Length: 177
Image 1 (tube, rainbow, N blue to C red):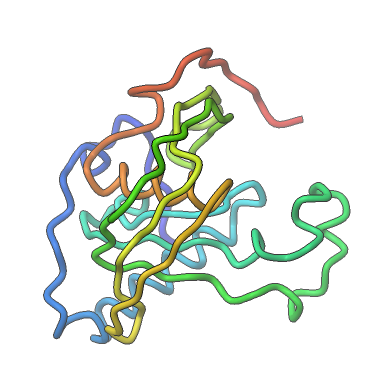
Image 2: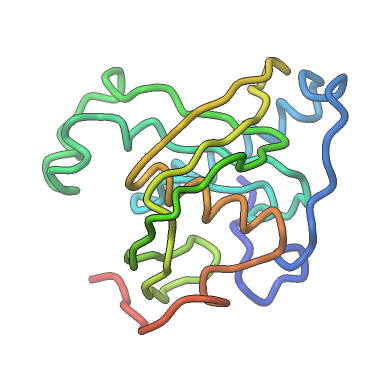
């Protein structure tokens, strides 16, 4: 399994180059998507991952389907009881571009699989709309609010070489128990 790179790795500071549409459904991209999915699933607290986080400077991110399950918001203890078959499919975003952000923003708690074990508060738009391609090269648009809007902003930052700690406040280390 691919290792999740940490904050000092140069790949996290690169601007990801767009993938030509004809290359989206290739075995190379499918392999990278599988590696990303496995890396994400290996982290209990992970809700999304961007390709740079496993060493690829490519504009791809995956959102874990678990955030859409009704028990996810009840907490980790309840969610762990959820049968795997009930967890919605992960969402794939290739060449994503945020097309709209709400003017209304809020400070939200944030962490990152590539900035272990630091957490802080970031100022994010409450709503976001994104345009992207799925794993088959089909273009789509998706609007979001709350956690999913925050994920869109966090992950597209990764594709521009930006880490949440670059603009977060009240950053502190919280080691797992």
